[in-house]
Image 1 (cartoon, rainbow, N blue to C red):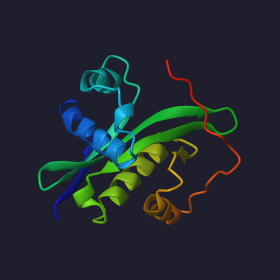
Image 2 (image 1 turned 90 degrees about the horizontal axis):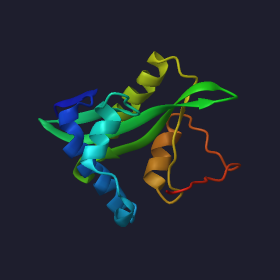
Image 3 (image 1 turned 180 degrees about the vertical axis):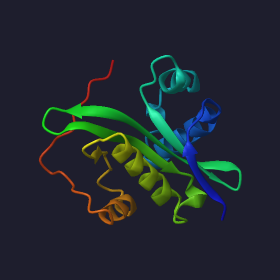
Length: 149
């Protein structure tokens, strides 16, 4: 297995979007994806990028991605928010997700973040089990809120 984890590049956007759509299908929410490759290109590689990314390349093909951004906690300071980590279904269980997750942790530490945050669906037992290996603390006290425009 020839696995390479590298920073995402403009040319990776189509593969990243394919993975995002695959994740949405896995989460039974494919109809909720309204983002586009064009918007991701602007948001990730435009004049004022708002997200960063890593891609996992296995035998020359992008099979996973980690998409993250900085957020600010008034209590903790600078934090890294892991928006999504996605691994192609055929490549799960081969260490690709672990490599992406660890690259994202390293990025947070490199940027002097005080920690990293993300969400996981309560029914996604394989992901929860994976995150527990890292000593992840799961919050029961907070309710997710959102406004869509």
